[in-house]
Amino acid sequence: LQWIISNNKPVPQGVILHSPWPNLEYFDRITTFSTDNYLSLALATNLRQLTIVLESIDEFSLEPIYFDVTDEELSKISPKDNSYKGFPPLYITVGTDEISFDAIHDMSEKMKLSGVEVILDEGEGLMHTYALFHMWSPQSRWVQEKIRQWIQEQLLIGMQSKFNVNMLATNP
Image (cartoon, rainbow, N blue to C red; front, top):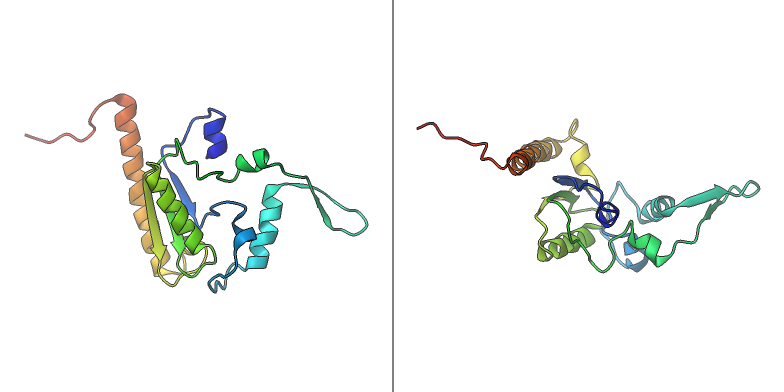
């Protein structure tokens, strides 16, 4: 979203984030974390490295070689200084048992303080990306239904503002 906004691209009417990474530096500062049977700290750290940028694989050792990423480049893909200016409404899902729960919760509070409309849907006792397991979990099905309703509301709001009319009419 920061990249979209900083490059003057069209901002979506709303965004759904399932267990987002608050920033890519988060795992460098982590000292304690909850027990998440789906996403380990080691896996998250490795995924972060792949997300940042992979230059190539050393052909002899088969070890990954990463580009050096400057603070400026990192700020384009990772929130810097808690800057959420211009963000659209967000629907965020997070399991209370995932390793980045506290950071996601803190991020959503900072977004709200910046004026961003945020719904933080916490799955009590659930894991990272729990909302994606709707075929097996009643909690996931319920959150998917709430997300469906939220999307419809965002589309209606967008249509009303685009056409500058009130789409809801009452029958006298």
